[in-house]
Image 1 (cartoon, protein in one colour):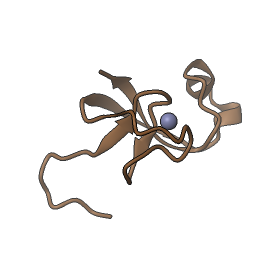
Image 2 (cartoon, protein in one colour; image 1 turned 180 degrees about the horizontal axis):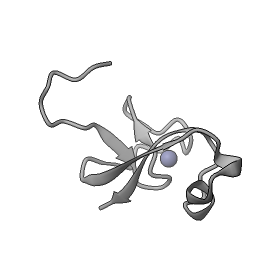
Image 3 (cartoon, protein in one colour; image 1 turned 30 degrees about the horizontal axis):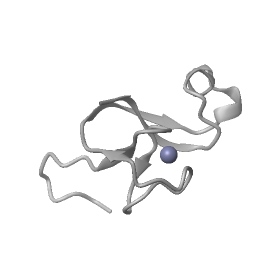
Image 4 (tube, helix red, strand yellow; image 1 turned 45 degrees about the vertical axis):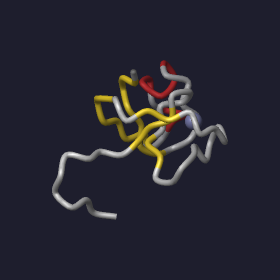
Length: 68
Ligand SMILES: [Zn+2]
């Protein structure tokens, strides 16, 4: 869903760094989310992505590089 133009970039899961749309992470099932993150990362093919392997990402999707 397109944002209203404000600098609101949503929340990410603190455990797997996945960008989350709802109130919890669909991967971890946790509500341990952070709004303080940076570095937008799109993983299309986790099995062939070095970045995904380094970050232990097994599912395609949008992720944050750094989460505080
Ligand atoms: Zn997660």
